Length: 311
Ligand SMILES: *[C@@H]1O[C@H](CO)[C@@H](O)[C@H](O)[C@H]1NC(C)=O
Ligand SMILES: *[C@@H]1O[C@H](CO)[C@@H](O)[C@H](O)[C@H]1NC(C)=O
Ligand SMILES: *[C@@H]1O[C@H](CO)[C@@H](O)[C@H](O)[C@H]1NC(C)=O
Ligand SMILES: *[C@@H]1O[C@H](CO)[C@@H](O)[C@H](O)[C@H]1NC(C)=O
Ligand SMILES: *[C@@H]1O[C@H](CO)[C@@H](O)[C@H](O)[C@H]1NC(C)=O
Ligand SMILES: *[C@@H]1O[C@H](CO)[C@@H](O)[C@H](O)[C@H]1NC(C)=O
Ligand SMILES: *[C@@H]1O[C@H](CO)[C@@H](O)[C@H](O)[C@H]1NC(C)=O
Ligand SMILES: *[C@@H]1O[C@H](CO)[C@@H](O)[C@H](O)[C@H]1NC(C)=O
Image (cartoon, rainbow, N blue to C red; front, side, top):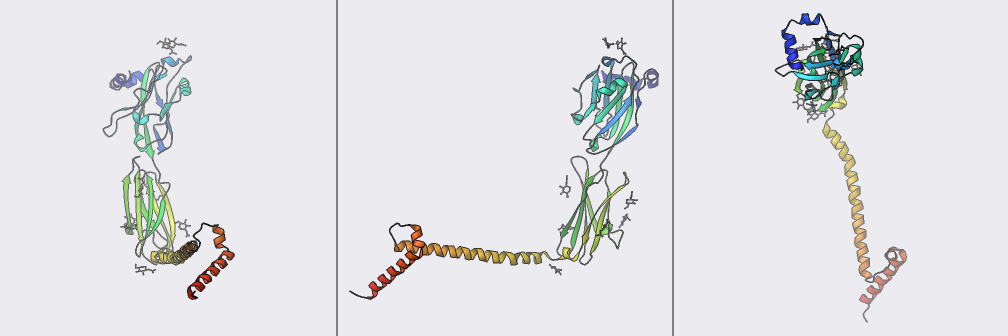
């Protein structure tokens, strides 16, 4: 019912209709943060007694960048009707029913996305029909910056990575220089959420110790976020050194393990020899105790005697 109505409303002189029944925005422009919640509202006149079955409310997203009109939320003759709701807004958009009876159509969108930015239409049909436009602006501050140090052959790579919207400018500085940006290499990718994933790398030469920081300047939000880290001689220590260090620990451990293995193998071999001396299956423990060793020796001597003294 709203499709043709909207067209008609736009085509005919709106002010003629609004003279009778006027919808007003609570705010012409709303700002929201990516992942957050936003509630946009418009007001319409109601007179006692309020009759919900006379009320129809529609929220639409105006077409942007060649997209079609998207239905965000619809209440038809007092009944929620989400059959035509666009998939983009599924389970994310609703209108608070309790506020309708005081003449407020409050659209709440949660888990706000960058793509939600744009112009929304608040259309109300009650004792008449009217509509107003509201602008939604979604931003994503570069909140968490991941700072990393990576050792190259001789240099050290400092990396700052963060996600946000719109595109930020990254600059680097330390105590000596306020602008190291020309030594930095910055790239960005678009994430599935429409955010910019920015990675900036600064190559630090050996002996350039100090406190380094990267600054993400979100020009549109006029917001700067930064991360910093100290670079010391330890960071330039060669990896091979640490490998050598670990070697000095690993080698004795390996040798010790080898020794234990050899001893174990040797004992096993000896045990086998004993078994050969005693072919009859006996108590294993007996073989190991001193008495049996002594017997064993006696036996060996006997055998020896037997071998050396001829009959
Ligand atoms: C609701 O609509 C009916 C007819 O459509 C009308 O008679 C009645 O006065 C309306 N009630 C309100 C509160 O507008
Ligand atoms: C509300 O309006 C409907 C028609 O739109 C009418 O049938 C109903 O009786 C009205 N209810 C009250 C309480 O006025
Ligand atoms: C260090 O940074 C340079 C240039 O930004 C890059 O080419 C190189 O792969 C990086 N090295 C490491 C170990 O991240
Ligand atoms: C830092 O220097 C670069 C050029 O090397 C320049 O483009 C950039 O605007 C400078 N940034 C600041 C904050 O001065
Ligand atoms: C952002 O970029 C970094 C490095 O390029 C990558 O490791 C990370 O997975 C990316 N994150 C997303 C969400 O694309
Ligand atoms: C490093 O610099 C940052 C800001 O640039 C500062 O907040 C921090 O205290 C400094 N750290 C050291 C150890 O100097
Ligand atoms: C953020 O940083 C840029 C350049 O580094 C500077 O021009 C701007 O004034 C800063 N803005 C704020 C709010 O600190
Ligand atoms: C680390 O090794 C490189 C060669 O791979 C050498 O040029 C450099 O001087 C070494 N640095 C230190 C601190 O030992």
